[in-house]
Image (cartoon, rainbow, N blue to C red; front, side, top):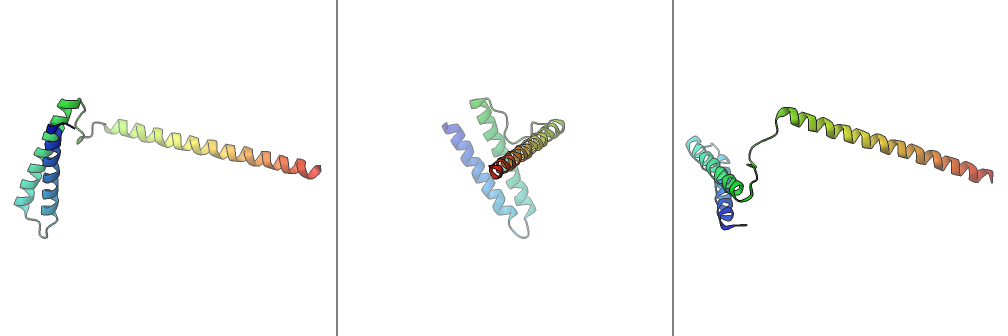
Amino acid sequence: MTKKIDTALKDLTHALEKHAQIVGLKPIPLKKAGRAAAELRSAATAYATIVEQKTGQTNPFIDFLDAATIESLTKEREFIAARKAAEAKAEAKAQAKAEAKDSKAGSEA
């Protein structure tokens, strides 16, 4: 990793830890939590910007898939799982049939 990415990562980690500490308090101090959240957003933006400049990768902190794409991918995953299950069931049935045929042939001999 480059020095800029390392520094941005350290800043992001520090901001995240600080935010977690503050929101873990009871009662939560709202002003401190707000400042910590702003620092966290700033650190995340800085990290994402540096990574994008260095690698060309999009911001890892945003959902770049729309709801329709996510739904389509979910349906496709379910279809693939159902097809694999059906293939496994058919294979098990064929294997059981072959074993039954073999045991029948063995008992006749």
